[in-house]
Amino acid sequence: MTVLSERVTQSVFDGSRLRVVLLLDLHEGAQTRFLQAYEEMHRQVAAVPGHVVDQLCQSIENPSQWLITSEWESAPPFLAWINSEEHVRMVQPLHDCVLNTRSLRYAVLRETGTTVKNRTTSQDVGQQAPPRLGDGVVRHALTFTVKPGTEEIVAKILSDYASPTARVDAVTRLRRTSLFMHGNRVVRSVEVEGDLLTALRHVAQQPEVRAVEEAVNPYLELDRDLDDPLSARTFFTRAALPMVHHLTSPGHDLSDVRRHGLYYRAKEGRGMALAQFLAGQDEAAADDPSHHVVRSTIFQRDDLVVRVVDVNDDLHKRPDVALGLGYGPRRAAVLGRLLHEGDVPTSDEDVALLLDRCLMSPITDRSAPES
Image 1 (tube, rainbow, N blue to C red):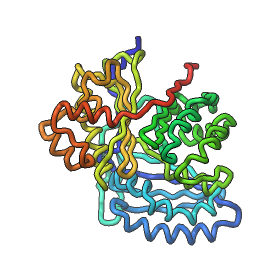
Image 2: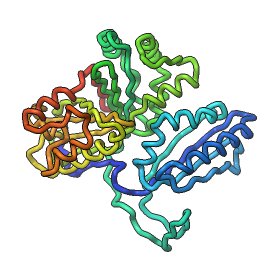
Image 3: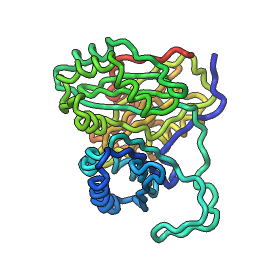
Image 4: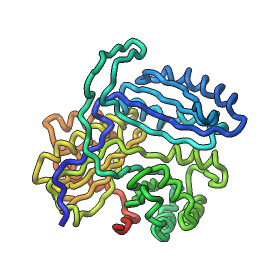
């Protein structure tokens, strides 16, 4: 029996300023086009709410390597922008110039004296937020829709394939892949030990995975051509469903849990607020020794919110906790502002019915063997 003694929590909602680092390798001869595309993108990004400042840097050792850093007031406005259709259109001109990219995102915990725009800090401002305890696992999800009427065909394709090799390199390893469907929407959640981008590229190159992706292609609502780098990049950019909160509660047996996926409909423009509300409810639940949610991971993009939970008891034992709606006297009022009309529960019976509506159908859940 494995029992976690400390709370593991990762979140974009701690209020810390955000530092984003984008590493780029340019195609030979693309420098002028890249600089022109950057100048146009920079003017647009400067007007995005929450953006503070950015810098463009060129390697002094290899002129084809570039670095863009940006600072944001907090993570939520950055995620709202980078997951928008506006961002997809904005970065298109850069794609023709770039051979390879890698994005890194960090909360700012400590800094020494500097002036950014109209903000001046002292010599040492101390920690902005307490460091969080992680578990060495990176969590990410992808989501896309298939043509109505093809759901059973797609579910069969996605459940019937050989798993790729778990070990990617000396430091990167696939830990778990969970697939769910809700109507014609597919959600694929992945857990990676090490570097997420390295793992995703590894998976994409595996013949068994490529065969599944090609088999699904005819049924997608949004066309893609995996042989066209721009088409594939655009599709997976739109499909990205970033993790915004994860919590593993202490004091629970981790060896015998069952995984479920929940899909929430937010009001237009309220997806991030709904994800933050659910994160707060999960944090409150972790202090309740009677709850049965061992782990909860929240993914959000625009008005789409997905929550993957591991429970050590019947999911319906506490429908409110299973849904992440269980704590606080003003719960109903808050939900009324966040959930889609018709989904706001007003009674315990409504909560149980909403849980059933939110539950996604499990397609496959595969964990890599311990090495």
